[in-house]
Length: 417
Image (cartoon, rainbow, N blue to C red; front, side, top):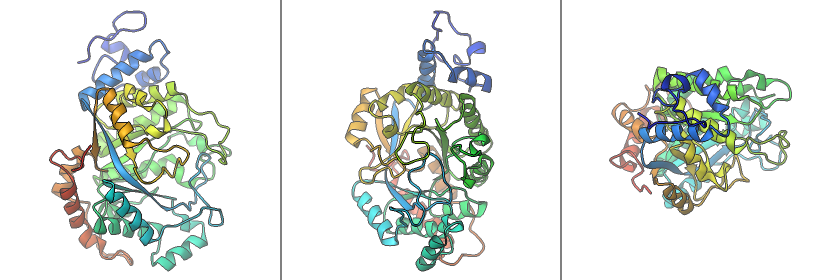
């Protein structure tokens, strides 16, 4: 149980009234109340979130040392906050070759990275004939076929573990990618469908329809795939919308037990985006949202990116996170190129100053590793597809071998910091 918690007026808060003095997860009504906590009550909220975190994973904050592989920045979605995506004729439009992918992965391997994060536009070939031609020259039918092959290439040729983040996925593609990656991800971002309206953040972004994204996250749960998801705050949603999105994630995790990590990410203004004059969420909003996420899901890993909260990112630890996410000693954050990751030595120093040990994890969290090693990836597809190089036959065994070699006895990276 928590130690006694008092409100700003000095009176103890009963467990039945405030929802904070109990280790049980918050209800929606409690979460809506606390995500709007006054400045006077904010310390109370943060204290409860820290205690919940410390019951879950005391004394340790994790991160993943990674390389960021932007497989293609062509995308059929036009999100108002995105500076990553390109049309084929835009400056900077690029689809990486296999040699480029492997060069980045090998360079990261030399720097002690364990994760190869694949980020890419969602199904650009459905919109752009130029992407269809690029894929034809590479020998693949779709961007997902190419992603699958590149995950397999990295898995076979390096010690890095792929973590694909390709957008919406069907049941078949979740199965296929799970053969060549121990985990994968898709940000839910929001459940507010009004952000699809004309002029809103997800106008002209067909893959950002909330029910479609929920379907992908749910299908990963049905297949038992360790999955990363989360919310993006400050894009036009309300505080109640943030609670509802977190509750949607919690509901899926309660049903399937597969959500390995929930990211709370804050919108940052960038030049040359439609939302370049949009107000950023305040530090207080970020702290409140993280704390409520922790209290809604006390036994789930909660992450917030340090580079999006510079210069005082260590304050996020006060709100109950237990993970910094992926941090690269090699590649920039291509999604937020104006926000460099902190140097690992600085990240370690600031984490230690807050009283925690910083440990390097794999893209799959330690508590999800035993099941992967026991049971492997989801079932093999009946027929190998063209361009798959019989990944279905060999990928699972190779993945299991790589996991066994790179994980220590506790499930962290063997070269853990």
